[in-house]
Image (cartoon, rainbow over the protein chains, first blue to last red):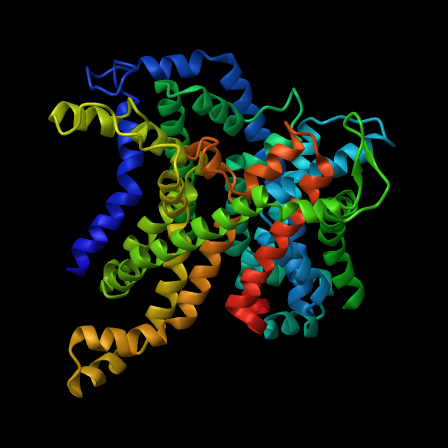
Length: 249
Length: 276
C-alpha cells in the first residue's frame, strides 16, 4: 500500500521530465508523436543566441563557484573556530530572503552606485550577485562537514610545530575537502540555474541560458526548449554522478 | 588564532555586507521615499508606501500568497510523509530512493516548470491525449489558475519536505513501534499515536522549508499563473520593472521579508537559529 503510494509520488516527480525529454526527439512540433528526429537538437546547436547564453552561464557559474567556495570555506572555518552571531545571522538571513527581494535590492543598490561611479550592468554585476548569494550555501555545507572533524587533529599539528595556517592547509582542509567539493558543486548549480536574480541585474551583454529559456517559455512552447532542457538535465545529472563517483573513489 | 580567524572571515563578511546587507538598507531607505515624476525618487519621507501594501487590492494578493503557500505546504506534507516513511523502511535501497527524491533538486527549476507548461497548456500533451480518447471535446483550461500555481509549488518544493521528514524518521527507534504493536495497537493506531507525534520536529522543519520559498515565489506564479494567479513576488517584480514605482515595491518586499521571518518564528521559535 505504502509502496504504491510512493511509486505514485515518484511518478509525479519524474514523469513530467521524462515526457519532456521524449518529446524533444519528436519529428513534429505539436504534442503528437510522429516519429524520431534530431531536428530540434540541430536547431539548438545552430542557434547563436543560445550558444552565447550558454557560454555566459558557464563563465558566470565557474567564476561564482570559484570565489564563493573560497570565501565561504574560509568563513565556515572562521565560524567553526569561534561562532559569530552577526556573521552566521547574516548568512542565515541571506538564505531565507526570497530571491526576488535579493534581486531587486541588488538592482536598487547598483542603480544607486551608478550615480557615483561609471559602471553598467553586465557580466561583472551578475557574477558579483551570484558570489553574494552562493556564499551562504557554501558556509552551511562546509560548516556541516567541519562539525564532523576532530579539532584534536589540528591541535596535534600545532603541537608538532605547524603554524596555524599550515595546520589549516595541510590537516583541516584535506580532511574537509569532500565537503568543500560538495559546496562547490552546489554553488555551481544554484548559479547556473538562477533566473530571478540574474534577470534583474543582467545587462544587454550578459544574457544567460535561463533567461533565454524563460523568454522562449513565455513566447509559447517550442520543441527547441525541450531539447535544451534535456541537455541541461543530462549535463547537470552527469556532473552530479561524476562527483558522486569521485567522492566514493 | 584570532588574527588568522579574522582573515578567514573578513572576505566573506565584506561581500555579504556590501552585496547583501547594504542593498537591503538601500531598499529600506527607498521604501520610505516618495516616487518622483519620472522614475525618480526622493524625499519627502513617508510611510504611505506601507499603508498602500494593505489596500484591499494588494491585501488580496497578500492573502492569496498566504493561502496558496499554506495549501501547497499541506499537500507537500500529504505526499511527503508517506514517501519518507516508505524510504525509511526500505532497508538497503534507502540511498537510491532518497537520491531519486533529490534528483529533481539538482536539475533546473525553470526547466521543471516548463515541463508542466508543456503538459498542461491547451494544446499540450494531456489535452491532446484526452481529446484523442474522446473524454473531452474542447481542451480543459489547466494552466493559468490557482490550481496550476499550487501544482508547480508542490512539484518544486516537495524534496524540501521529504528530506527533514526522512531525517527524523530514520532516527526513530523502531522498538517504539514494536512496543506499540505488542501493547495491542494496530499499525494505523501506532502510526497516529506514536510515529506522527515523534515526527513533529521533522514536520515543522519541512513545513518551514516549503512554506518560506512558496511565500516568496516568483517563477511559478509568473509562468503557471500567467498573470491571473499572482503572488507577492510578482507584484514586487512588477513595481521594479513595468510599473516603476520603486518606493512601493521596496515597501512590499520588506513586508514580504517580515512575513517570512514571522513564519519562521511561528514554526520554530527560539530554535530558528539551529538551522544554521
